[in-house]
Every structure is written in structure tokens, then in C-alpha cells.
Image (cartoon, rainbow, N blue to C red; front, top):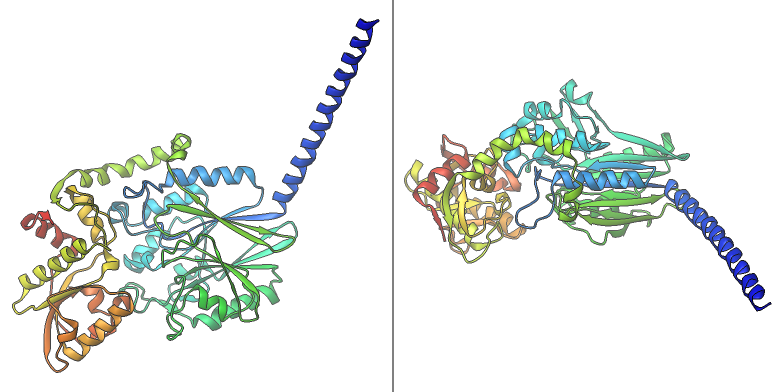
Length: 490
């Protein structure tokens, strides 16, 4: 009898276990269904900005790399039914991949990763309009430009002022807001591009999306920088765009290399909240913005692009890169100098700034007598040098732009104005010049780069000077000559 009772208990327990499993399975199915429903009711926007030709992981941080980025994008796509991938500009300029292949690699990679939307950054113009035309000739993403007009029909036919995504009965409108190329892009490199008044054009595009297209949400992809100037309405950024317009829900920004973690919430002209997000630079992170299509709630997070993804890299993508790597690797193998500093140096380091200033002044003095000083922009120094051997590729990475060194004669009063512009940006590089001791009525002979002499980086005061000598070589070619004579960087 005792045995029978125990057996009965065992039988009941067994039945309970079966029931528990059934209930657990049912609960799991319900949770899975709920999760699936929740995911289907949101749009996931994967976004990048200012990746600057960083095809391989960044040496200084160990972050980034196009193959790792693909792992993340593919993973998110596999988990969510509604995904859109967008880039906010400056996919080029910063490594030898752009130096050697003029944007072909970067655009091919965006195609391979399945980007849906792409806007222009200022560096997309670095090889001029013909270079840009070649780069975009096989672009697969939809190209957005809301406040640029193009005279060349090959450009105007490629770009559209907005794009509409339909998801579960909702319409999401995407638009683009770009910076004024004047003063930022080298003269002659954006011929045929008309910059439309940013505030009026942005609001008109929003109103068209809201009123005519009847969209439910508006997302602005921008390449204007996180924060402009409240004193100068022409220097606008995402915060000014948000505050002076109404109807945007989400701003995905670029240009200023700002790492917004967490994303910022600001109010628009009518007091409604707007989320602003940006991922920094060099593809170190991707952004994942989730838009709840029922409530309009937006959540944003940054995902690091790091070595944990290496084991899952796509073999086909890695093989596609091999045909480009030979040229890159050869330049990184040839030693041209030694970095004899106690630690890494970059554009913010006094050692590199001093080196760059001395280099510009030296080359200017080689061209003509009487050079008393030099001005360069630390924003153009795009690399980190570690102590030890310095290669030709690393030297080119330091000054990757197609600039030339020039010498100009300029009045002291205009030189003083130039220093005011430099101070407003947090200071640039100058050697041989004391801003406090400049005589407004004297004439100064200085060396600089043609980009600044022509008013780039808003250095309009330098355009008042007279260029009297121009190097026959591109700046990085002059730099390699200088390193032959001065191979030790202290």
C-alpha cells in the first residue's frame, strides 16, 4: 500500500511536470509572440557618420572596421523585421584607401553592407565634382539632398530631397540637411552646387512631408555638426536646426565627430521634443535608433564596433578587400622616419602641431625669402603616430588632402582677424608669429596651405592677402621630402 501511494504521488508529479512544461512552452510562445509583435511595431534605424575611409580597425583605439560593422548590421537585420541603414556623410578621407582609390572602396563597402540611405559630407567633395561623380556612379543607397541643388543633370537625377519608408501602415519621411560648402569646401571643388537657405528649406521640406505626403514621423539626416553658433546664423548645427524648425522627430547628425551617449533631447520651435544622436567618428560605434510606430517613442543606443566581432566576419567581404590591400600595405611598409616621443601624438598634441608648423614654414622658406611665420590647421591632422618607425603611409595619413603650401603677403590688420577666427575654433597652429605683437599697419609674409589661403575653415581674412608663391607639389609630397631631411620627430 505504501508502494502504491508513492507510485500515485510519482504519477501525479509526472503529470504536474508535463503540465508545467506545457504551460512553460505556452508562456514562451506567448512571450515570443509578444516580442515579435513589439519588434514588428518598431522601425530600427542603424546609422553611421564620419567613418572617414576607416576600412580597417583604427590602430589607436582598436575600434571600427568595415567587416565588423557588417556583422552588427546583419545581426540586427536578423532580429528585426523593419530595419533601415543610413549614413550621415563623410564616408571618405582619412586613410590610404581614399588616397589610392578615390572613394571607390568606401562606396563599394556601403553597397555591400546594404545601406538604404546616404547623404553628402563636406569631404565627399575633396576630389571635385568629377571625382564625386565617379565615386557615386555605382552607389546603391538612395542619395538624399534637401538643401542642395545641382546644375549637372547627372547629379540632380541621382539625388532626391526626401525618401518615404512605409511600415505597418505608418509613413516615415527621411530628409537631409547639409552645411554651406562656402568656407568649408575648397573653392572649385563644389562648382554647380547651390546651397539653399537652410532654415527655410528645412521647414519647407518638413511641411511637404507632413502636409502633402502625410507622413507620421520625420527623420533628418544631417551633416552640419552638433552645435553651431547662436551669434552667427550661418554657422548652424543640429541644435539650431531643432530649435528653429518644427515637425522633426529625430536628427541623425554628423560632421562634428560628436559622440552623443546618451542621445540628447531638445525642444523644437513649438516645444515638442526632438532626439539628436551622433556616433563620433571613424566607425568606432554604430547607432541604433528604435522608433515605436504606435507611440512615437524613440530610444537610441551606441554599439561598439570591436574585436568581439572578428570571429564572425564575412569571408566574401574580406576577400573583396584583398584587391585593395596590396597598395595600402606597401605604403605602410616603407619607413621614412622615427617618432621619438614619449607617447602617441596626434592633432591635439603639441609635438605634432609644432612639427606641422615647422614643416609648413620650412617649405615656404624654400620657395621664397622673407617668410616670418606659418599658419596651419590642426583639424587637418588626421592621424595618431606611435613612438617608433614612421612609414610613408602614416606620413600621408597625417596630411591626406590635395593641398599645396603657399606663401602670401598680408596686412597685420587682416592677420589679426585671422587669429580671431582661429581662436573662435579653439586655436590652430602657428609658428614664428606672436598674435599679441602684430602691427596692424605692417605687412607680413607667411606660409600656409592653399585651402586656408582661399578661405577654407572660415579663414576669410587670409583671402585678403596676396599669394606670391605656390609649391609645385602636393602637401604630402612636400612632407615626404621634409622627412628625408628631418627624419626624427621629437
